[in-house]
Length: 265
Image 1 (cartoon, rainbow, N blue to C red):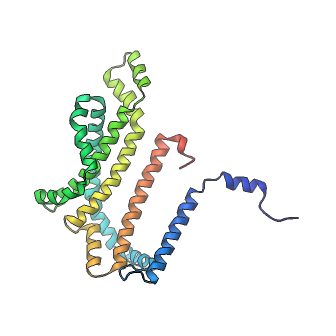
Image 2: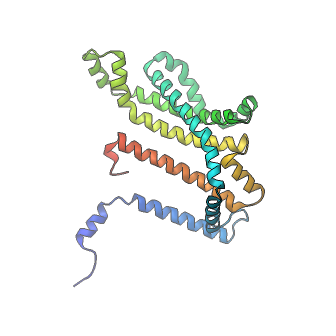
């Protein structure tokens, strides 16, 4: 009697979503290639993955990494909250009022298209090297993304729902609160998620260009003393932290607003 997988097991494998498996396999191949490149070595400043991982564990153990993140997250959270409140309000207003769209849309389109990171030295010159400059750096990068996504979300609201509200003699406020905002919520949340991604870029640039504190201080210090394993461990931790945060927000978005994609996600 032949031994092998049963047809039911094969069908079960064929119907499973293997996204997580391929992601883990891709990550394992990347780490393996990094280890090989570091052992050759391709460059003196590129340590093996194993050495970088041990440096990461060491910084966790001595508390330096957690302390740096505690410092970095303060301006990041403040900047994201400010960007979210102002961005959603301005984006919704632009979607509802043609005059607001005419006045504000070109400004935010230019802000999103232009290399806003080049303004960080100017922000430093005007506001100094304190918390204000870092919050502004986060806001400058996150705000245009949130505003434009909220604006497009409101403009793409199903017109039949708006017409139905009018036919039932709904007021303008009822139209906005019960039709426009709920229908635009998925894209608004997606804009917030993308704004947080831009905020991560802003805070890292701010800590590298304005004043070396938090994560930027770790990167700058370990680079200056040639502790490349610690430097790469810090950089990798930023990538992992931002990827996990944005990925978690994406799953929350799917759970709240896109039930048809729950099985895929």
